[in-house]
Amino acid sequence: MPAETRALPFPGDGRVAVVTGASSGIGAATARRLAADGFSVVLGARRMDRLTELAGEIGGRAVELDVTDADSVAALVASLDRVDVLVNNAGGAFDAAPVADADLDSWTRSFEVNVLGSVRVTKALLPALRASGAGDVVFVGSTAGLVSYEGGASYTAAKHGVHTLAETLRLELVAEPVRIVEIAPGMVKTDEFALNRTGDAAKAAKVYEGVREPLVADDVADCIAWAVTRPHHVNIDLMVVRPRAQAAQHKVHRES
Image (cartoon, rainbow, N blue to C red; front, side, top):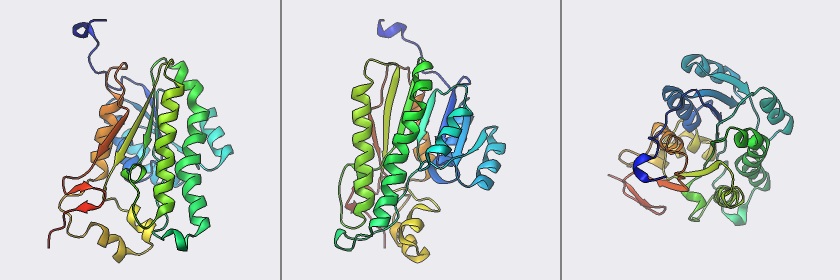
């Protein structure tokens, strides 16, 4: 149709959004933002105490979910009557070791959560997303999925996997009413990401030391909400978002 008659961006309007890894960080912020935008939010994560509290706060529904477990994913699917948006946010980094010192258990965990978890949930919910007539699959990737760097190759390799997963799925579903969106944040300061990666609070603090205004979870949630509320003929293939202090993966301005 002519551009002047296209529909305006649409809000949630009761559309059902499933957010994985919703108990903290970007996932929790995304659940809050989508609920504020009118979505009916289903929050999935393993830590039900946090999840239940957040669901009560935003009027959402908490579902215990382990994306690495097929039965857990099947139980999520069975509990849903409708799905319009899936935000594949569950993930994380679990070490910062060079390849020469690779911990293969850490590599396995990284791929299980970041890559296979996203595949497992996406595959399970695709029928419902297709049936919605205007489905969205959002992958929360990382600039680590676009540019490699020393240390923590288990994470960069996994996020490269998420990036190619999004690209491939977009090609495969081009004739169907499902958008594939990838949001790739750079440096985001959350309570748990760097701590889980380093295992040490002091080392985690060093990651952000001297960086003026790193991104926070709400910044990424804002990007996700914007992408899924565009008119459905508009697909945000890939959005790279960094703090202004981070010009590139290796170029970060730190104030003394």
